Image (tube, rainbow, N blue to C red; front, top):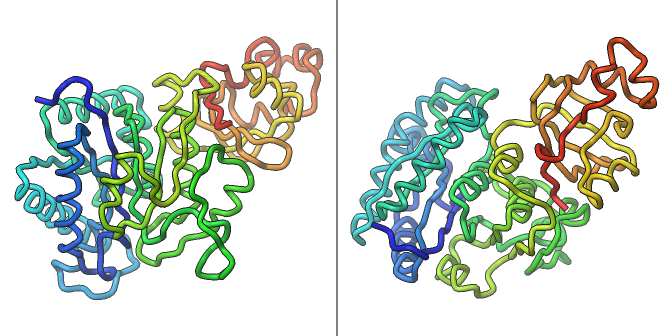
Length: 375
């Protein structure tokens, strides 16, 4: 059984780090990973691994050198590969007396709050039993509507589920740079980020690998939610010797996204809103509404809505952006997009006197208890 007072670590491994090509697993790296995690566990950490590369592992087992583009072939490869990948983890970790388990998730498992809580309880129980859960997206059955799309988002969700003390993303790049280092020779590594603002999002750029499904921007968006949840995150080159051990010890590795004191109340419900379901649209608010939300902790009222984009329904998750388009929050809409679009630009009195819109006059568009702010 796990001892009380142990800390919790989530390690996310991208496909580009875990493979030598798009159809070959690097078993030497996996062995080194197991060695590091055994040392981290001895230092008092319980560990969850969020892994990619099921498809690559399946292509290797099937003898397919080039990644196919059609969904049935990719899902078939994932089906074969998940078994092979799980076996590889079990063997590498088993050499160091670590028992692993397999946890496969889709958005269907987290969009429903009851299922989300069951996933949380299962992961927590596995850690109590001293198991190392190996988490992956269930690529065999995932379709676009229920895909996380990248394991950075999945890892952030897992970190929030278990209330982690640290998340480490093992990437094929040293961390976040001021620009894409493959394009700009003047790009410099950013060792520490205390706030994810427009400058950091702009620096994130695009993907630097052809193997994975997520680029730097998905990692930054994951960091943004984790920072709001009070969970620090590190992005580092996954093949740097002892990078996980060093990050867990608080030493400088890659880019650290700090977790200062939470400026806003972050409840498990809000974390589910931030990560548990896909975003269905965006509500752009005026400057007055932004100040009310960020500075005064208010709910969003219809009079503060400037633009509504996307097609979403009642209770759907939406982004909240300012007039420049910068997303600074996420919440659950208390009205559908078609109704909100009719209310844009109208005063409270005009809304209240309209038979169709009157429902918006006295209730928030997004209640503060169902709103997550990223800054």
